[in-house]
Image (tube, rainbow, N blue to C red; front, top):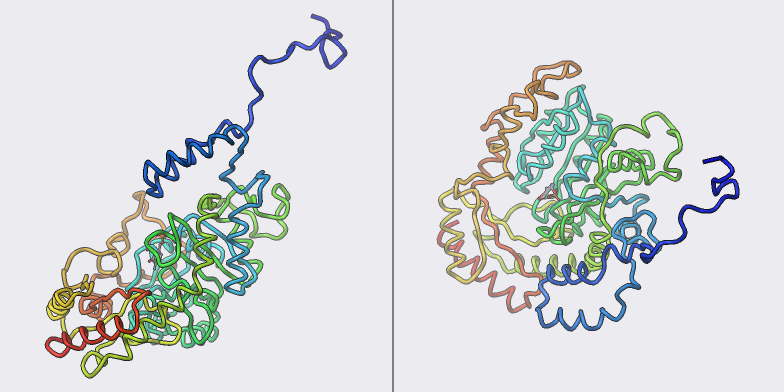
Length: 445
Ligand SMILES: Cc1ncc(COP(=O)(O)O)c(C=O)c1O
């Protein structure tokens, strides 16, 4: 075969044409995938059949894309991020695939790594602390106070020359004392990374939680007040922190203005991971975020109506709030005099017709209290070398990890009685709920 026979040189083309239809993305996903989604939402078979009949008329013409890139339609993730920026009033918002990923991206962005320490509360979901270790930092576990959030006084005691960041966690609808935390952080030149997985929509002195520190992290999973599925969000006003968070959340650095460009500044490009949010999560959480403000107002109003009806002992043992006006308030928490009483109170409240629980009083394992975090307490790591606990860059004895290192947190956890609030309770409902709590507290407390 001579070179002149090549089509590129004017010869006859080897491919005369295909018998098959040209491929298009619409052939990849279509009606069946859409109906699988409808089934996941729980729509009845009857409704699905109706949808099938209607949508089948457009089969073959649709072209769904579940990824942000190379998508002819406006990216739902980009829309979600823009909505987050607008609602929270911040410069930068990054959608990710979970709250844990949000924390990882934020920790790495902030410079958490070998030789650094991060102060986390003893009462939080384990991911807050685990992500520090995953980012190769050392978690330093601090006490909580009667608000069930990190105790600023203990934070100050735990600062060392290695401390990189403080992580206040706004637990179960109540903000940490952000004024005190920010003061301490600024005094010592530390980053503040808010873990707002549990209080999306809550405020502290008029400012949205997650927007006060250097970075704010959210989980938007189905288990949270805002969120559906598995998703997360990072907020910041700092362009460089945002840039680094994007690099960690997408190691191929797709989000930069120019994907394949060399780094614009040392520290922009490094080996990260992939926490990209899918378009499905972007679409659903765009809607969820749109409901956030009204929902937060409703929860807060309802919770405060119940609280206003509490009297005597019930009022005395109410969990302390750092800003009742701003609390998300999806749980009312009472702190019983001891663990057994907490269990009895929860049972009595249930008998009165409320939902109530005292997780600590049951004594069962729970990832929300540090004493069960044996991965950290016993320095369990994925490989035998034990990094980062054995890291030579960490030039100090490790924190004295033990199951009784934060006795106040363990005690408060054991004594806490949770009463979930229904955001739609009417004033009459709130009165009944307050009466029920007063009645039970009159006997137990
Ligand atoms: C305080 C806190 N931080 C982080 C997370 C982790 O979020 P995700 O489950 O979305 O990874 C959670 C989730 O329960 C949480 O409650």
